[in-house]
Image 1 (cartoon, rainbow, N blue to C red):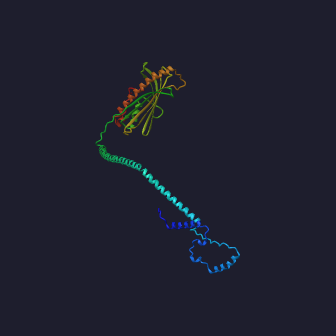
Image 2: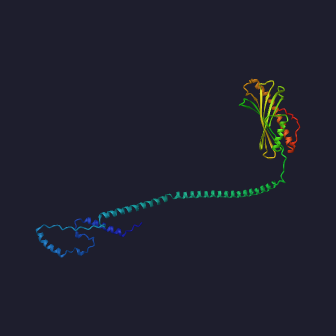
Image 3: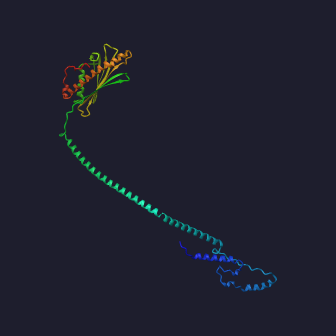
Length: 385
């Protein structure tokens, strides 16, 4: 921004002074005004025609009153026009105002710089301190990252060594010559649970046994079925056996006798054999009390060794009071559930324990040829079950 007077400003000032002089000398003649259209001084000298006219007119002037000479119209241009001058002045004033505003803005900035100098220094110090803190934090994180990467590399190296050792040991253990074949002893499982059957509204004794056999499924099926055939007769249905017997059971109130009708049937289905049976028992002294037993034996190949067999048995014993033709009193039901049912459960449990022991002794060490030998017609100690 320059404060020197330019040529345009000089012309504007000269025109302004001329306008002021013209306004001050309002009664002067046109001859007294300076020419603005560039005419020379010879133009002011009257010509001969004008002189002649003046001589003739002098005579007329004697007769007529003297007229005022016509004033010469001043030729106005854009430079000397009052409207153009005002427009230029307004533009100049606007420019001056803009310059003043710019200078005021510079002054305010300078004043702010003087006042905010200490604040700026304090903010700069705080910014530097925060920058140092972040730098220290980033340095700590970088060190932790380097330590974690180092630990990770060490762990990967240890894991790789362990994998090599595992592969070497696995290769050694997979050799059949170094494997130790343990003679697994059969695991016997037997459980007895007494529950209350809401549907039958009576107590139910549940038996469940598991017996592993060291023989094939066919040999185990033949052996178990042959054992059932010892003291039972064939029915008119294939693979069906019947037996009617009187059993004696010890109890708290003395020995209890019951008549039992037993029904057994065999079902073979490829890789499994199912033997189901049902018992109906009646007390001669209390013919209105009927007891029922429902059970099954399932023989399947063992999952550990398909050449061996797993025998599982399930049995339920309960008081049969569904017959509408028989009336059983509360005291009879209490006697049947507390005395008779307990005695029958003990008898059946002893039978299954003896039956499991016999299966393990016969099927464990014996070969498949031993099963083809005819068993003597002897009854087990609990053969009357």
